Every structure is written in structure tokens, then in C-alpha cells.
Image 1 (cartoon, rainbow, N blue to C red):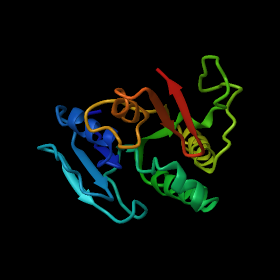
Image 2: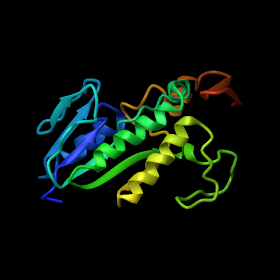
Image 3: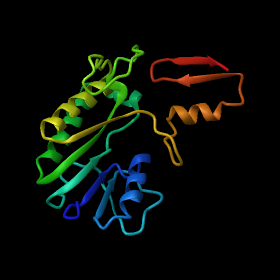
Length: 192
């Protein structure tokens, strides 16, 4: 991929920051965009603060890592159906450019969460019940239609992880008798 440029959209997030750090060790140029300032910028990586991702132009043959959607599920649900339209619009704008590949960070929220079986990309248990999950699945289909790649992610763990991570929620409560796992719809109590 030496003839490519790595573009990271959503570079201020947990995964975006780690990608930038990892890619900075390669000879490939790395350009990061985010709507919020990146606290720990990596030497040799170009950073740009933007209000919107639509309208950005990238070098030809770029590989775009699209991490630029919110993980605040409650906000998405309150925003409603328009969120799906805006997510699809952004993906369309990215795919219209002369890029090598778009890699999209989706979510395991697209699965029916009442299953106790191993789920894969072609699983029959893909039943997005929320606006958030519907948006993810809609963008996935568009990206795959254009020979992009999709990674269905769930809570990620590590230094600098999101304040909304289930892992951080558990770690903060380890000394308590009961751990309360927060969900955007309900609270779940777990006895330990």
C-alpha cells in the first residue's frame, strides 16, 4: 500500500488514535480528521479539525478508515430516522471519490442480542432493532456494494477507551457488591 495514503475519519476516538499510532510506523502517509481535538497527536501524522466530513477531498488511491459516527446510542435514538439518512449521505460522499478502499467501523448492534450462538457476517440473526443498528446495517450494505470492507465492532478495551465502554463501567464498580451494567434502554444488575 505504499502508493496509498491512509485517511482516518474520527481520529480523536479510541480506535482512531490507536490506528494513527500504528500507521505512523509505516512509510505510508497518514492524514487524520476529527470533529474534536486529538489529545495525543502522533509525530509524522497530519491532523485536521473539521466541522463536517462531507466535502473533504482526499488524495487519489487513499484507504479511508471511517470511524466518524457517534457511539452515543441514546443520542442517535433521540435524533431518529434522519440519522440513517445522514450516515448514508456521508458514506456516499466518501465512496464518490477516487479512493482505493473504504473500511467502515460498524457495530455488533446489528445482531439480535437474544442469541446465544456464534454470529458471523452472513448470520440469519441480523435484526437491527434500533435506529443506531439500522444506520450501521444500511451503511454496511452501501460500503460492501462498492467493494469496501466492514468491521463489526463491540466494546473495545484499552488505555484511552471510551467513557461509555462497558469495561470501564465494570472496572469502576469492582469493589461493590452488585455491578450495574448500563444500557441505553435499561439497567441490568449482576450479582458478584
